[in-house]
Structures are given as C-alpha cells and as structure tokens.
Image (cartoon, rainbow, N blue to C red):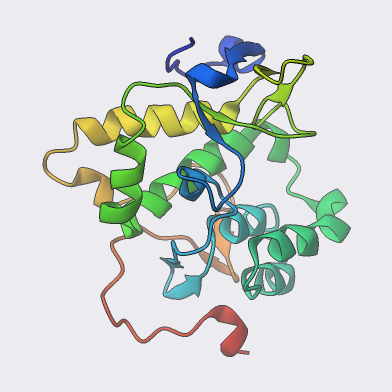
Length: 217
C-alpha cells in the first residue's frame, strides 16, 4: 500500500500501483467517502463574496481568468458535472500555463473546500486515517487511477487528486489552531474571478445571505 508523498516535479510524472481492497477509494459520490470527490454536492464555497456550489465549478472556472463570462456560466451551474461540461467548449482557450499549474489550482480548491466546510469535510478526511486515498476513474489516470486487471483489485495511475487529499489530511492532523480555515490566494499570475483578483478566503458566515451565482445575473 502506498502512503502519502509530496508532489515535486519528479514524483508528479510517476504512475503508482494500488491494491483497491487496501485503500480508500473515491468513486461514487453516494459512497462512504464520496464527499472527497470534487463532484460531491453539499460543500458550498464562497470566493470574493460569490457563492459557488461545488469544488468542480471553482476548479474549472480557474481555467479562464481572462473570460469572466465563461467563469460566470460555469459557476452558475447547480450540478458539478454540468459545470465541467460547460467548460469543455472553451478549453482551447484555457490559460496558457494551465497544464503546468493545474495541480496547484486543485490544491488551492481543496484548501478552500476544507476552510469553508471545516467540520464536515475535515471529519471525513480524517476518517481515512492513514490509508492511501485513490480516486478511481474509468479514463483519467492523471487525477486518479484506472482498473487494469480482471480481478478488479489493481489500480494504476498518477492519482494526483488522491495524493493532494492525503497531503491535506496530514496538514489537518497538525492544525490545532485552525490555521487551515484561512486560505491565501494562489501565487500565480492572473488569479482572477469575474474580473477581480482572488483574495484571501475565510470561513463562510452562517446565514451569509449570498445567492448562488446563477441567481445574481
């Protein structure tokens, strides 16, 4: 079983092999650990005062800092899958450094998810204990890992999302003072949402009164 590892340039390029029965598998959102998926609902976010319903919508919107209308369309979706699909026609216009910085963006998005859903998401993350976390995917062996044998128990992939979740879990274990409830902006050029630089993210206020982006326009 493979435990957490840092995401340096060398390791990012490597594939890993996991025994499915020995790891925490993130596959269907209704399963026990489905909330670890970006496709899980129930973990609303707020960035720059804008309410965003899913982590997937936030991640996809970060492709297009120079296209606020596209960002608005993506984050206005109630379904994470629809948010992902709305990004597809525009992907050739993704920011030019997207492939190089996307794992940094994902790390930041997961930090935001934790900061603003600290108790529920944090509890789920810690419930994985010290097991490897693996996103099982049919097609994507970058963010996740694919089944590669007839027994259905061997997963192979880079599993970058799973490794980022494990990295965050280790930080959470040491977060006795709630430092992870505040997320600074990512240190990359043009880190924008709806035409404005993304600022520091803090916990959502209960009953903040913010409407989803789709209801604001």
